[in-house]
Image (cartoon, rainbow, N blue to C red):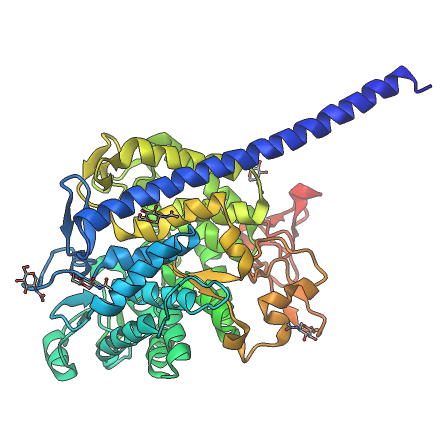
Length: 574
Ligand SMILES: *[C@@H]1O[C@H](CO)[C@@H](O)[C@H](O)[C@H]1NC(C)=O
Ligand SMILES: *[C@@H]1O[C@H](CO)[C@@H](O)[C@H](O)[C@H]1NC(C)=O
Ligand SMILES: *[C@@H]1O[C@H](CO)[C@@H](O)[C@H](O)[C@H]1NC(C)=O
Ligand SMILES: *[C@@H]1O[C@H](CO)[C@@H](O)[C@H](O)[C@H]1NC(C)=O
Ligand SMILES: *[C@@H]1O[C@H](CO)[C@@H](O)[C@H](O)[C@H]1NC(C)=O
């Protein structure tokens, strides 16, 4: 006979198993329900755009009209707007990859056909190079890669690379912007104007407007590099790389960058920088270029820049701004654009740092119901004017990455809260409207195209990542997926090719999409890969006076501290 106490132990075990499997199926049901909720949001936004705004650029959801905003992006003072521009179907281009991810092949095909037949860039319109690159060129390149992926079989009719043709046409129109003394591109380019005219007209332009000059210099390489590989025309990659290298050469002795410079002289104008607006996708693109193209050089640049960021901008879970020359803290502000940073840290496997920053952003989100554009950390209050929330994706994006890496159901709860806030505060009959002031939740008549390209996409992927299981993707800074292909990785040792990472003996700590390098590891080939989170101690003999002298551990990615005896180590965890 089995003694009674074993019965109860068995019963307990049984109940435990039952409750885990119940909670698992409960979770699966919840994810499915949330996925459908996000799909519904996307279609509400998309259908309203198609009905009231297409083929203009973006929807005005309150008045159910449109705005031809491609020429307004980054153009804060709305200068030199064209008289005769009727839009470029911007929100449709931005929606294409989301349609594929959500499994709407018919609507994707409809969009591809319309663009193939009707889109032209031969318009007299001055556009912001960075914005047009990430939204339009990136959208087209990504949609082309998806459309031409025969394993996906998305199109019923034939596909003759029309989207690639459009992308190439646009890429050619970008080229004159790079004809500057420094190789750093002008912020603006007229799609129609010929080179010489452009030179005359913009010779005094500073690559800054929209406060994202580095973006014009540093964040082109994914889209332009992919375009070069696909067309066989090396010019796109070459100009983007030249600009990137020029920018790289302008780092300070602390390996930091400013945010604004004059492209004709190549001198810095604004020396304060952080990880938010102006710089964010610069770091992002160095790492993602390494993943996509496999070149070692990108990794070296990224790693050195990342270490400098962790050293000079990080303050606990927060990041402040600092002067690139001295490292002295300048602004103690949280901006909603910074919220992408934890997602980037997930890609390199720095989960502890990603998790702790993400929690702080979540804290602010809960406090206001959404993430305000700018929050003053030193005063623990909202920025007096930048109180808006334009439906930005960055917090959802980081939540998605962290869930991918950890599968911690807590992130699903965060996603649910984001979805509920968006529906509660921003959904209107005519779409989704930006919030003008998070204290009053007053709305603004604008549905940005990135809501379709990114916000809805990352939320959907949080609840259903089946798209990610088929192959490895890198998402551009605008959320457009580019497949990681071994044929694009010619110069890499085999072991670097992500499909081959199962050969590695060490457990993988982050998501399947990544080429994360934390902890540091030695490959079978004997090659050593440095951990991205590793920050060496100030002294090579590990001696220290204060915690400031200690770095970040390469295995755990945790900050080392200074012991009573004067040595750096992970003392807290021993
Ligand atoms: C834009 O629309 C207006 C009004 O429909 C039309 O007169 C104009 O020709 C269009 N411009 C272009 C470049 O097609
Ligand atoms: C695809 O999108 C169109 C337009 O929003 C919609 O009418 C249709 O129901 C969608 N189909 C699927 C399978 O979601
Ligand atoms: C291109 O635009 C015209 C005019 O709006 C429209 O009739 C036609 O159907 C469009 N082409 C495609 C393939 O959708
Ligand atoms: C994130 O941080 C919280 C709070 O410190 C902790 O409870 C949680 O386990 C962490 N999650 C991961 C995935 O590291
Ligand atoms: C994976 O790597 C091993 C050696 O590290 C190599 O022999 C093999 O060909 C690689 N496979 C692929 C698909 O790259």
